[in-house]
Every structure is written in structure tokens, then in C-alpha cells.
Length: 228
Image (cartoon, rainbow, N blue to C red; front, side, top):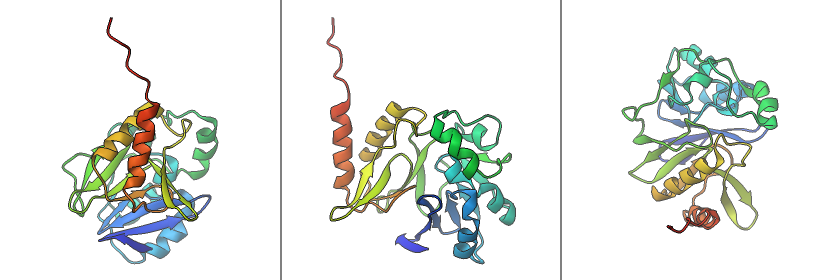
């Protein structure tokens, strides 16, 4: 575990690929797959948590939610649009072959008592911003004081030798609504974050990286039809 921003600690698990969770004071943001239990036990040690908040309800972000919430007797929160999936009331609407194959391998038990995230819930100076597309209930957590953004899977990050971290949009197959996620990336850009902490990949400390991605997406938008 390492500090990546003031009072924000990265917990990185690497099985079967890099999945990030973040500890902000006594709040855990996302909790990887169910296979990361040893890593989390080692990193969290004897800490006491107050709550778990999820950027979205995909299996590689909620995997330990039930186990950790039961261990500490703490609530789990996610956006109301993702609650039915997290509670196990409905299947994940993403029916891509990759999601159908991988979700059963990564997901932990449903969280039947999960609660809805609301704008009232704040932690460590972070506020929730609903940015749907990757899932209907995808959110980011933004800290106005210093521009730090826990951005879930609205964007991803990859490290390129000699260039550093670069922002990527999720694939079509990874999104419930790919076009909606593109709109959300532009809304994320409008927040003018100074540090992006994604759900996968290294921190993005160079804001122009997001500027370039937003500009690329703008150019890909179809031109409006002329008025009759």
C-alpha cells in the first residue's frame, strides 16, 4: 500500500490483472476481486473501516465487499442504478462474452443490504459525481480542494515506456452504454482534475493526458444534422 495523494492510499492487486482499490481515511473505495483477500488482509492489517463505497458493481470491484462488510460490520454503498446487481436481485446487464466468462470467476457474494450512494455522503473531502456509461451506476469521487479524482472505470490507464501514464477509454464490450461513457469522459474532463486515480492502471498525474483523450472523442462525434 502506498500513498498516492494526501490521505489516499492505493491497494493494488494483480490477479489476474491490475485492479486498484483506495483507502481514504476509514473509507475503502472498491475492493477488487474475491481472490484478493490475502492482499487486503495484509494491507489493511488491524485498521478499522467505517464504510465501503463502490465506483460501480462489476465483479472486479465488488469482489470482497460482502466479506469485508461482514468482518467489520460496516455498510456498503453504490449508486442506486447498480444496487440491484450488487444485491444479487438481477444479473449484470453486460452480456458480452468476456463479462459472462470472467464475472463468475471474480465476483464475491451479493450484498443484499447494500445502500444507495447519495450526494450527502462525503469522505475525506470527496464528493460523488454520477458518470454513467461503463455501468448505469458508475460514479467518480472528486476532491475539489486539490483536484484528485477516484475515477473507477470511466477511464483506464496504461503505462507507456518513455511517455508515462496514458488515459484510455474502456472498450465497447466493457461498457453497458459505450456512447454514454464517452459523454461521461467529457464531463470528467470538465471537472478539470489534477490527478486521476483509475480502477485499473497507474495514476495519471499529467492533466493534458485527459485533455487529449477528450479532444479525440470530440472529433469522433458525428456532426449534427443540418436543420431543414
